[in-house]
Length: 382
Image (cartoon, rainbow, N blue to C red; front, top):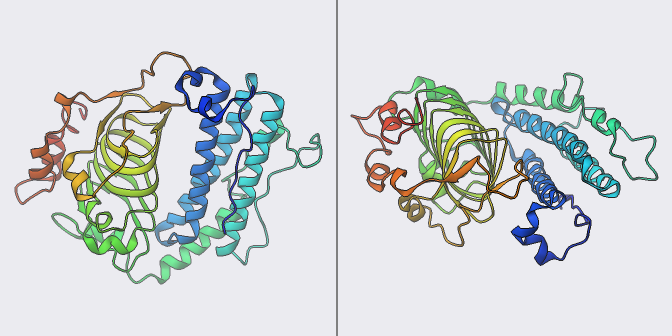
């Protein structure tokens, strides 16, 4: 069974569970940081658990390791930054959780890098009493080399990725460049889906890709249309999905049973149904969403949210409560509403007939034509 990291306290002063869920208490920065920290810990744990199922082909596993290491480093720095309003005891508990998360990463990476004699370890604080980790500048420094060229865990994973890529008989991502028209990569012999480094392509995953839904990632795309509905509508939703560094694109991500991480998107549209959605460093992105929990944004601006279009809600057979408009901005601590997101007005939402008749593409519609029809290259894409 995977080791889970839990934060065994509520922020001081103590609150009841019901009070903790009350938005009226979310003006308390200690409570807001606690919720943010819990969400980030859970998300990073899920990424670590996904490592053993990821393919090393194309560096997907390495990218995930880099993301985890960056997340741990960022979280350690944010605990330090919150020291002005978090009591010392709570700071120590947060630091212990970060150390446990690092240990969990070491244990996981050891499973696919057994030949490595090294492990990434956080440096213990000399001033800590017993096993408690002190949150001071040395904690920040202990994570300063994460992901550097001297870190042995990523090096081992990189070697593993290179060896697996060399022995692979079929590289679906590279084949996309050699196809014409609407690309339909089967991913029939893959365990997960990784699409990256493309521009101007229309990609529609067929139902055969349902065999590869253990995880999915879309990275470094520009002026692309990607439809992942078919494989995730056959009763096999993605376990997790990561969207990163995407510009002027339409991403129809389908159904995700676990978390969706959206990072570094600009002037794009995302359509997705998921259990959790976390959005970082995005600008001018419309999200058509069904989410079973509060969507989380951080360091974002110009975000607009709308419910999942009826076409995709029916295809994916989505049920249950939809909290698409209950967005939490963890970098906005004031009592007034965050200026970084808003509900997309109904008159500005993409009409159902455009979803049905244009987004699916056709001989007469290019990728840019579709992006113009949905407004990516128009009102918000210019």
